[in-house]
Length: 231
Ligand SMILES: *Cc1c(COP(=O)(O)O)cnc(C)c1O
Image (cartoon, rainbow, N blue to C red; front, top):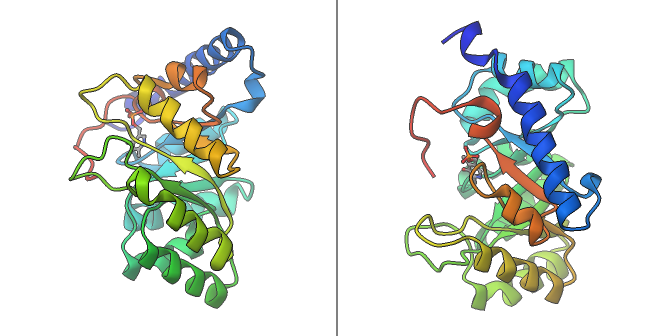
């Protein structure tokens, strides 16, 4: 590891940006309508700094504790850095999440919505929220079932007043992602939500075709992860 492992970050980023432009053009969309969230989980701060040097300012982490070890110092050096939580959030970590993250993409249940509302009031910070939808209805996967989404939107956005901006999904690995992206776009439109976080290294071009406004790319930017991340 060390320096050598992350020498490719600049070239990787240039390549991903090129693919974003091409996919956006093919879908008749402005490239500026797609935000790249560089997923730095398992990679050290040094890797993040390489991306920062290339102008990347939006990052994603899936664990509160890991992000706490890496990002406070980076945020001090780059105040415009925006950090997204993309992994499941336990209610006992909600306060730390509200303190550190600028966006919480994994709101997926009523209890978490209530705790986030309470912690945002206590901390005096209001990170934007996305509701994660389990479009594949997989038992082991986080996210609200599509049938339960209307109630969660009502509670989180309308009753508790959380800044809910959009929806996020992680399609089942064994299925073609297009149907899941199309479903997420339909659900977001139905609820008047404008942000669609969908698409990872293997399928972000398809996601852009289906209207993704945020894509979450880890491997494509930082290279393969040494350890399997918990999801
Ligand atoms: C790890 C992760 C990603 C990035 O995955 P890659 O395949 O490495 O691009 C995107 N979204 C979530 C929720 C993740 O946990």
